[in-house]
Amino acid sequence: MNGVNASTPGEFILLGFSDRPWLELPLFVVFLISYILTIFGNLAIILVSRLEPKLHTPMYFFLTKLSPLDLCYTTSTVPQMLVNIRSARKVIRYGGCVAQLFIFLALGCTECLLLAVMSFDRFMAICRPLRSSVIMHQRLCLQLAAASWVSGFGNSALQSTWTLQLPLCAHKEVDHFFCEVPALLKLSCVDTAANEAELFFISVLFLLLPLTLILISYAFISRVVVRIQSAEGQRKAFGTCGSHLIVVSLFYGTAISMYVQPPSPASKDRGKMVSPFYGIITPTLNPLIYTLRNKDVKGAFKRLIVCVFLIKK
Image (cartoon, rainbow, N blue to C red; front, side):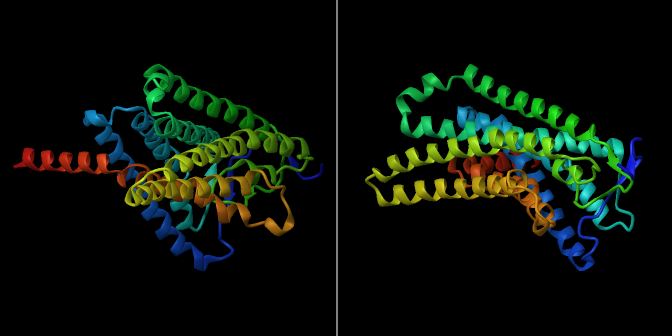
């Protein structure tokens, strides 16, 4: 227990890749571009979905919940990351670290559940089209979305509390880009086996179970797509499903490698390498994959641009 600092630290040092300074400029450029695309892509989806009556369906209802979630999800970490990458003193205040830990975990868990709900909606629309409008009514959609948010924030409150209650070592160096549960557990000078077991169990609930539901949904969807007579229709359907699964696999796969696999000396940099994929890259790709490739959304977006152009004239 020597070296334990029972008092609350004033600030943490976020090491990131400070031991590899040649990586910092490329990472800054990639993170900045991804963040800008995330902002404009998701804002466009929110605006178009609000103004276009044709997009007031369960599918687009959940997408309009995913877009603001992704905006807040990336904003909780990326601005601080960009500042620290280009700063000589890479620090974050304790209060900022606590807020970042809670918000990032809450929104990440919410997205895990919301993506599973969206896959179920797609399953109903494609595999049970006659019953879909009856089952996926507005009240159920609201309940599913609310359950995702409540579950995500409830889990974050528990995990954040358990993590922050651990006594810290004298050093305050977080070997990561931002404050995340696995990185903060490494700062404790006491045995964290119980915390790691709890984190593993909850990660199974929020990562492995939703991913299993998504894969089962798309397996049934694939069976229906195979029966499509038109080769062009099959190609488009498989292209859409394939792109969805790529983003889902990227998000869940990297998050699982961070939260479900046990820590080991060989995986020291694993968190720093994989966290940008589920924390930055996936929210950037979501607008492109889920809506901006969709014919209805593209048509609505074009009409919106035309209306704005005519108003200005």
